[in-house]
Amino acid sequence: MQDFIDPKDLLLKKIRARGGFVNAHAHIDRAYILNKTNYKLTSATLQQKWDFPDQYKAKASVGDIYSNMARVVESMCAQGVQAIGSFIDVDPVVKDKAILASQKLRDNFKKDIKIVFINQVVKGVIEPEAKRWFEIGAQYADIIGGLLEKDKGREAEHLDILFQTAKKNGKKLLHVHVDQFNSPRQRDTELLVKKTLEHGYEGKVTAIHCLSVAAQPKAYRQKLYKQMKKADIKVVACPVAWIDSPRSEVLAPSHNAVTPVDEMVAAGLSVGLGTDNISDIYKPFNDGDMWTELHFLLEACHIYDIDTLSDIASVNGLKTLGL
Image (cartoon, rainbow, N blue to C red; front, side, top):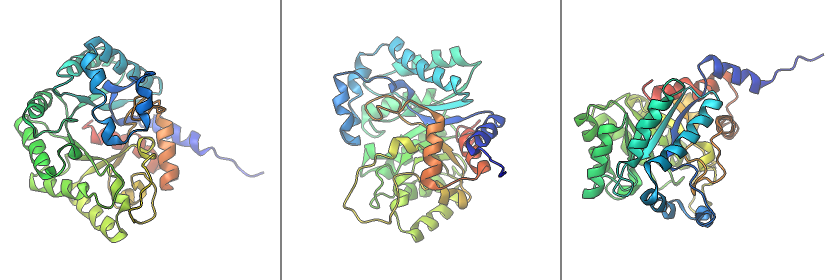
């Protein structure tokens, strides 16, 4: 009789032995904001969705935001998640409400889970009022956050401001959204590597998503991985959030809309796992299940090695969060 193994059971046991899952990228202050009115906007483009949460953020109280955040954290705890890293909005619309909610959240769950906060810059960091709130958020956040597309055409300046602000506030780590559009026309990660080296932040920067890397020619990808390794840039993949990348007539190598984790791991890069948005207009059906995220990733990238997968699901995420 042939011996049978259950790879899922083996993998989950290995993850538990390493302390449990780590959700290295989320936006928990915007979770669970779906309603009958806004649901029709779930099919809009990413750019069209960026400012929609303003309607919620302007009206929500600190208590409202806290309740939604706590609901996510309770779900993470129920899954045995040991740590979560979440961007929180700090901008002219929500102001400091998410900061106040997150302080209460960390106090109330400090015995159950490690929570790390990153300031989200959905209004950019260059326009004066947006920059003012970015600087306020940077003082509070554990990690400095960035979103290059919000200052399109001025991406290098955006990054310079992130690094300068991190240094000024004594922040050791940066998490930057890059290459989100799955397009060969986008080369954010290359710029992030250049600026990391320029500012002397090797080993302190995490690239979030890196989808467009997979749309580049193989020679470019391999060269980029070497540059990322030199700068010791870590990566977080959120496969469920980006598998819906729309079809395009732009020519590119055959690939799926998932971070090319298999190639990155082979190149010696550290890759963690995140859920990104949960039950909002961005991802209405995403319930924040960490196994679903890992399953998507391992199938999309054809990674079946138990040790590699357990590293991605646990210890690599801890590294990105400075834990």
